[in-house]
Image (cartoon, rainbow, N blue to C red; front, side, top):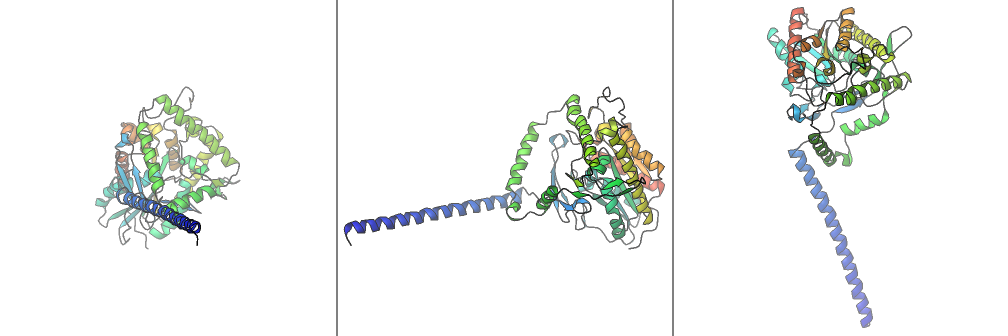
Length: 425
């Protein structure tokens, strides 16, 4: 072999060696990145845990809680800024595992986000505060089950109720009607329609396919979606935005960005419902029922009011067949019951009545023989601003839940709503 051939051969070997080393360096770099990401993910999960979404799609209820799930909620700075982690038990209720029925009095509380109350520590939630106030009056004990689910309307409760009555054998059912957006749930969810006889019947409803897929993936992530780095980045971004958006809004800004938008959304939801579109979209997108509050004679307001009364009658009849008591708790909207919270332009909407949304539900309860507690009167008699969060969060706060629990416990004892033989398993 000549010197030129040897030089070419050596150069080829060097080139191959360099390529091998470069490839090894890239592999090492890739492995280092993967290990670093894995260590960062582990660190974040240990020190700043996030959880998969506790909400999953359901063919009947549109959405339901994932048994065993956890949810982290951070209050706005104006509301204290606390971070609260709530636990869903093995049967899909917020709180501890259920106790054996035996001789204790069991109460189930249904409602939306105000009842699930992911914004409050468990002892401060309305169901738990009700339990603590009822327990001393019953030697056998009282268990109050939190059956609240974010976004739920009375229609979803009516579908869930028969199975829960059969399985859990409660002595009393409490339904919290949020007189803010629960009327609107009845057309957003598409579950019921009024037939030619004036009765409600199930429609051919379903959760929109894209929303169903999104909920399924969020609740049961697979593959790379199990990594939470993207969620941490999103959480950080929203925290920064929230910090820079804490300046209080003027009444006119509230009016233009919430009440007016709620009216437009109510009209849009009504048009979609009347097109016979079977798909329910975002199951959590609830806004103030401004059409009923501001324009009570509008077609959408009349339809939503008619649907609400028929659903409440269905709840009454379902519990009556099971020999179970029923009581409604009417939770007023902060828009209506609070001063200087949201602004309604009464010159533009002269038909606006602060008490209409709550009063309509009260009238329905009276007409149909359903025991009720209308919190509008109690909250309005004092400074209602003390009973709600602020900064755009219009849920009742711990004080509001405590006030409601005390008033309902008094009503239950006065009306002897739990003084009935316990249902047999």
